[in-house]
Length: 194
Image (cartoon, rainbow, N blue to C red; front, side):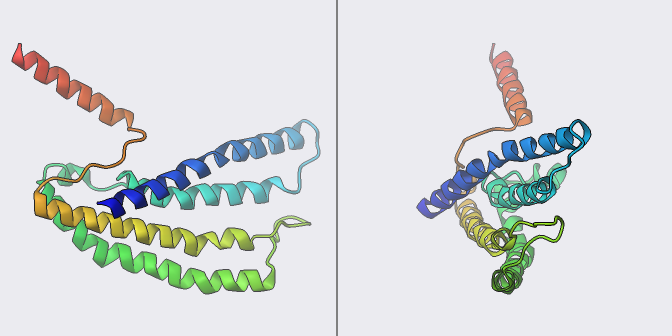
């Protein structure tokens, strides 16, 4: 499980660190709106900055969300199954869909990135477009982070199949809905024992 927790820590650290770029994105969009409508002088950089920052947030959120087990699934059925059955289905789906898709992303992303770096590609959306080759390098990097996190999830599935319970995850934040459900469950247990 050391491997699993190491991968979780890496993707959690990267996800939390990159999440701060939302402040830069917010500032860029707000400044562009202010400059465009109040100063009547739109910027040349805000559009490029906003789509690159949003793309960064969107891509890096993938490995972080997988590490937190917060990707969307059909919980109305899955939730009622035993942990072993959940792990068995997850394991099959990782090999059937997840890894082929992620490996295709990495495989296609590497030459795409190489071409961008060789061309010294710049954005065509503004007159003096910023370089976008570093941004395109994120495609195979994030794909590799997703693949590594997927390997950690496979280890989790195997551990659950062996023991019958899901191994614990790192805790950094919890969904409000989950906290409310846990609190209601505890209150129900407390009232039932009185």
